[in-house]
Amino acid sequence: MEENLALDKLSAERRERYRKISDVLWIVLFLNFSVAAGKIILGWATNCLSVLADGVHSFSDGASNIIGLFGIHLSRQPKDFDHPYGHRRYETLASLAIAIILFFVSFHLFEEAYRLFKSSRTSPGAPPLSFAVMLATMLVNIAVALYERKRAGELQSDLLRSDSMHTASDVLVSLSVIAGLVLIRAGWVWADSLTTMFVALVILRVALDIVKQSSDVLCDHIVLDAEEVRSLVTQVKGVKSCHMVRSRGRSDDAQVDLHVLVADHMDVKTAHEISHLVEGRISKRYPGVSDVVVHIEPESTLEEGHI
Image (tube, rainbow, N blue to C red; front, side):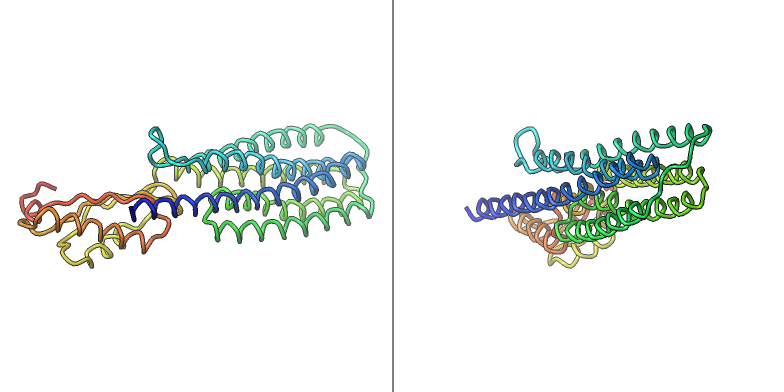
């Protein structure tokens, strides 16, 4: 009965976590699309590719928010027979989808920038309004990135963390575009193409970072330090030794399994109680751990070389 109540409480806490992540994404989605609209309209009006590219970059931020909301909807589904570990990796898959979008955007911008660099055209416009719009949108991007990163830490969300990285890149991109506008006003037409290429490089770098983080989760990269877990477990009374500590998943949804050695003639009930103590000690030390499997072994197996 108490175990069922604890599970219900945990399930409720996770639903609340997903609701909060969704709220953050809706706020960021509105701001990203507002920023993108301002940059795209300015880019078309002034015939400036770098500003237009920055607008596309911001628009991809909003598109990633929509994918993120879809991923959150799937991730918040409870465990079932076919998914005994839950659906949390849909959130990681959504992060990969964001990266794929960025790869396509980066390639397209490289292509367009190179085409314009090789062609001859008149200097794009860079009126004072361009600087005002870029500065305003840059301030919005800074605020959004800081807010999203803060909430990512509070909610332990890979999705919000990767999306905040994407949004933060807009700040560097906007600075480069402003620098390009200064050069354009000075009559250097080529600055537009080179700035666009720089924007594409930044987008590509962000995509690669997201792929690295997501692949660590999908390829079961180690999550917890094995030595630290071993030291923690051996503090439990009755535990003689601990080995084969393995962990996978994410920092906020980790699965751990390990082997624990106890006295040879210990009765099953006592050994079972020790396994629960080990589970409790690990869960308390690492709040993000969602599953712990403890394999009990007699101490003599170590001496006999069976492990």
